[in-house]
Amino acid sequence: MKRIYKVSIGFALSAFIFVVIAALIFLFYINPFQADGPFTGETREDCNLLENPVQVFPISSSNRLEVYERKEGDPAPIVLSRNRDDNIKWCVYAVANSFSEVHTIEFVSYGPWFFIGTKVEGIVNWTYGYEWTGWYITPFGRLRNYYYAW
Image 1 (cartoon, one colour):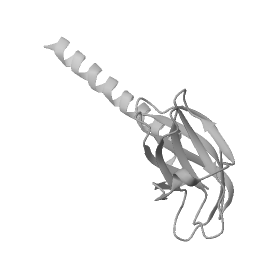
Image 2: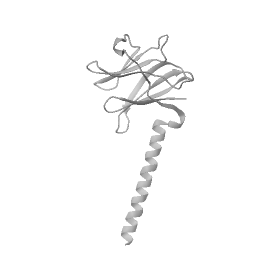
Image 3: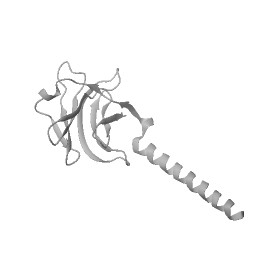
Image 4: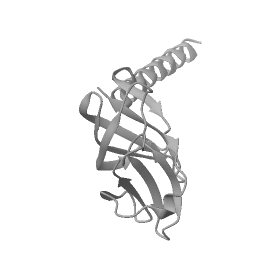
């Protein structure tokens, strides 16, 4: 009986420590209390007509992100994802809150995001100046969401 009690306490303590560590990693990795978002962007039509990206950022051997500068009349810069066959997976205006303006985006790094996709980080120039941005992409290449931190 004492052995079962010790094993139960050990298991509960281990589970508690695991949950605390996972929560801390999540909070520091995404930092949701110091970021605006999540945003999913505003879908843009006719993305296949876009020319001359200001940045082409490879995120794997088969996918890349392209950034197009904001033109007059656009709500924000355009970010799109292409696969190696040049097919567009998604294409969005990188809008933020209705009271914010996004001027430019530049991606600088990427890596795995836990076991559920890819995190692409960069610098955004928006209403609050130059700040961090994090874009989260599913394992299948779809845009999950993105954040702008200030």
